[in-house]
Amino acid sequence: MPKLHRKWWTLIAVCTAIFMLLLDITIVNVALPSIQRSLHATFSDLQWVIDAYALTLAALMLTAGVLGDMFGRREMFAIGLGIFSVSSFVCGVSTGSTMLNVARAAQGVGGAIMFATSLALIAQAFHGRDRGTAFGIYGAVIGGAIAIGPLLGGVITSGIGWRWIFFVNVPIGILAIFITLTRMDRSKIVTSRRVDYVGFVSFSASLFMLVLALVRGDTDGWSSSLVVGLLTGSAVLFGVFVVTELRRRDAMLDLSLFRLPAVTGVSITALTLSASVFSLFLYLTLYIQDDLGYGPLAAGLRFLPVSLLAFAVSPVAGKLTVRIQARYLLGAGLVVVGVGCVLMSFTTPSSGWLAILPGLAVAGIGIGVVNPVLASSSVAVVEPDRAGMASGANNTFRQVGIATGIAGLGTIFAGQMRQRVTASLLSSPAGRAVAELHGQHLATALASGQVRTAIRRWPPAQAHALLQAYRIAFSATFDHLVLIAAAIAFAGAVLSYVLVRQRDFVPARGPGAGSPPPGDRRDGHPATAHRPGLPTGATP
Image (cartoon, rainbow, N blue to C red; front, side):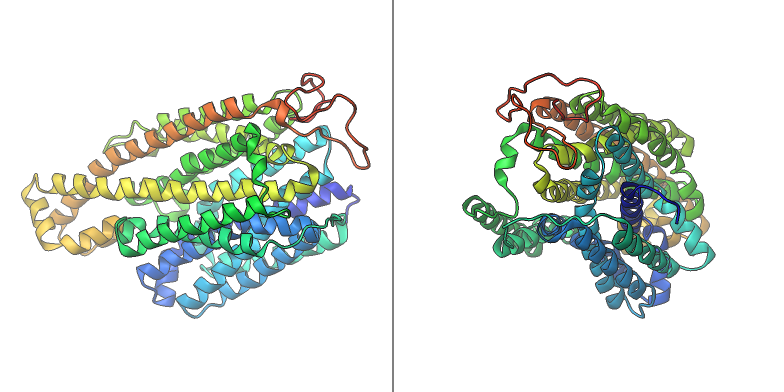
């Protein structure tokens, strides 16, 4: 192997793992019809292909970060890679939907371990200007993996079959495990902390129930006994978690950290970034494929502006963290994301994909600015021995943001689409025939985003009437959704600017450094102001 410094091997292993686990959030979407035909799955089964992965990823993130702090980040990272690789193989050989969904849940467990320890591994390996570069590359990988997923999914599914979406993870995972165990420095931290079993169970179960309620809310109804019961149970368990953490000396999550505005601000930034633009990717895919009629590969190509600009901007933003305070970069990046969302709100029923291209490009720039700064800030606001905890909490906020964003936007989308499509159909004779003859199938097609598939065997006049009504409704509803996403991004920009105070950051010190110099204080009065040449959040 080329003789690289061990820190760069660490970055290679971490970025490879993060790319795989984030890719599996989006890459599967375009393969769902093929999976359905192959496994004879129901629509509910297909939902769980996505939901099982997202739920375990979100529910176990924080716990995995703390375990990394306790038992060694390198070791936990390798375990996560192993779980993810084995479960990916099981996904690929699945003979039924239940087997596939259980394997997807196991993928989420491995992904949570990898994600939760990733930032801490980079933070302990890099210092000074190299840290900014490393976090810039890390941020580009995050943005690119999420954006390029539909493209790779289309290529693989149409080329060699949906099972290879999972099989390709296996050799990559094995290589990453080898690099982790042979080229990465040991990372075990001497600590007297013990496993917080009550905190682990209450937090994971509470978050699991919350995300499940959000996922099922639109399908079962927000007032249904299932959703109400899940939300109630989540609230009760979260209360148990808070009480437990306040009383324990070795708490899984030190809630006193959130007394620092910067910790709260970084968490809100992660939440609002995911709840705004990343939650829109589902509806952008629906707009390009079902509304405009592009295939999976063609749709994936149209996401390239986001991924390419995120890749290009992230390293630059990472380097700027040594010169510009985090609050300015985070706030500006979210403003750019919000502007990008606004620029996507001018579609019409006759618009093509070029109508959203300027917004996609601007949003990609904003993502590229926020991601590396958010990654570095999440571990810079805590002491090094709590970096895993902070990393897990930050990534949990990311996943909760995506879950809540998709659920909230999904409720609005479903309600407005039903109303607008029905109103448009009733305005013409052919449309009224569609409403009378295909009412139940129409509701299912609208809920699943499979309108074009549903109308293939319909009489031409009825198919044209529904497609026209759908495009009119989708344009108006989509414009509404992107404006809501923009409002979320703008709110996050304001809060990040106000809360992410430079004086709350922990001074960055290299390996073997002693205590901070006299005058470095955590009481809100740093010894000196931020100046160029120091990592974001550092005081000299």
